[in-house]
Length: 609
Image (cartoon, rainbow, N blue to C red; front, side):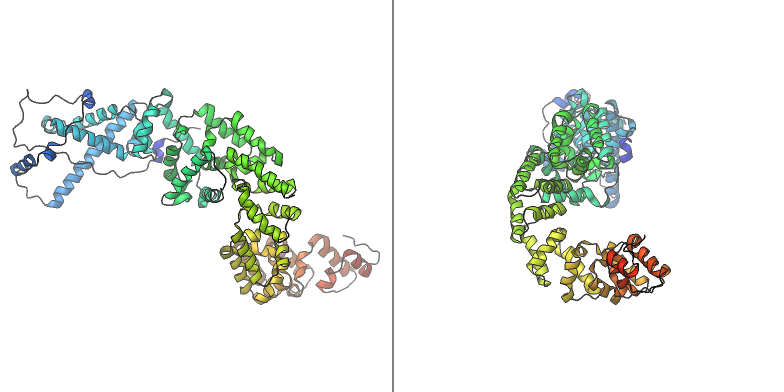
């Protein structure tokens, strides 16, 4: 499907005012035809640079001109409006001239109009050039006398554009976001080859923009990942990675920062400035095959832009000699094609030579620490960002875990469950340890908590842990009871308050319980608020009330009721007891194991489901 024309992505740009040209007044006698300078021709542009403007060089002449001008009584505002209108007219004429010039080199009328409307610095450069030549050759008055000022001015602008020799590439590069200086530097290079003729460049840019900016970057996800990747890179970067970091730092330095990385207007020009080779690459034999290859290994089409924006050098790689061999390096940790696609979306830098070198060092390090290879492999697959972390930094956090007797297999379980913990700095980790010590937990309890839910120790205290404490306090859990809650269900500290804990609490209140009841239940059975409303809470409460005919408050006395399987335990035992007209509390009905329950209430040692 053809890419939409460039005009459809037109962005109106305000143009700076061109400088006023100097002229002699009409009262001065006109030179005789023999004295008059010849008409402007292309060869004039190759002559030596003319001297400075005469009116600037000779103040007396300028003063005499001012004295000979007739006195004007027009209001200042009217004169300013007239001057502004004149400038706008000249800019409009220059824009038309550039559009015609671009069409001469193959741009469609639509694209030419779009480009000429988005290269203000280029237009001003041409206008200034024409004005300088007019001042030197004294052609302004002659043009005015002939009555063809507009036509004459446009012709000069066209000749000035031709003299630049870039064949329309320079204004095009500015229109896609490059500064005039960068565009000038690259235009000569691009225009020297037929393969980079203006129509082909326009087509390449349209295709790349379609790939990179085809949808909205909801919430700046690409930028957030870029920030995370940059924050945790501590290895020596190879050339491609250094160039990528320089590009991302340029975007970060702009207003809006990396959150605008997925925005066409904010990042495309910077991308081409940083990686001009991208516009030289042939689409059919290079760019499109790489895009197709990424789809084949499991990268969703809408995520291909993530990979290119976060690691642009990937488009310069050869599939068979660069990309495939590098990806095969991950076979040693059990990565399959679909896993590769997921890893690339999370961390495109896995294609960097420096990252691959660090992969070997990390695997060797964990082998030395007697961490099962399956655990270290799982850590890398699930969180490839750790590949940017140097082994020397990783050792620091491993040493802190070792002090808490988390080694070898225990360490393997921790990093496989929460590889993000390896990216924590020791002071950050120790702050979380201190946080739980202040709650009244000893080191053994903290170590068990790390083993069961290591994600807690990779969490932010202010944004995550304190919010959970506040929630528990709001439902009536005192500080003295917090250690018990954490020991029984540490996962509570990684549940989202707004999307999980509060909705579950509100549901329990809606069915007739009070906030105090919920707090009492959580103290007795901490996992309560970890259960899904639709999958656990609602179906079990409906069976309790509608089928068993019990009041909702029964679960306050025995909140563990929600932990039992509805189909495998609650229903079978209820029907057995009902058939024997036996009425038991929830604890009596569910507290015994199957063998004990069968011996007491059935007699044949087996419960029929």
